[in-house]
Length: 75
Image 1 (cartoon, rainbow, N blue to C red):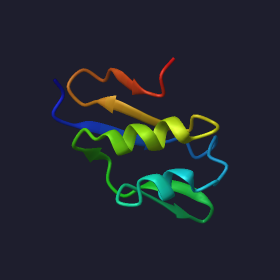
Image 2: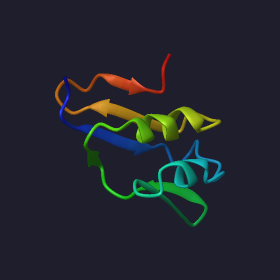
Image 3: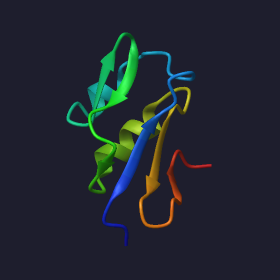
């Protein structure tokens, strides 16, 4: 079981809907119309997965810091 996840946002894909910031305001905010993680490495959380899954353009990635395995978005 992973103890930490790395979250990222592809700024080229992000369309600024702010769904992620609304779903997980403790992890994301909009800066100049683009989602930005408040921190890169976080403890595993269902709310982070919900934010990644809610992104309509799949701009958010969640990876396991141990082995860089992609956790979200689901393929």
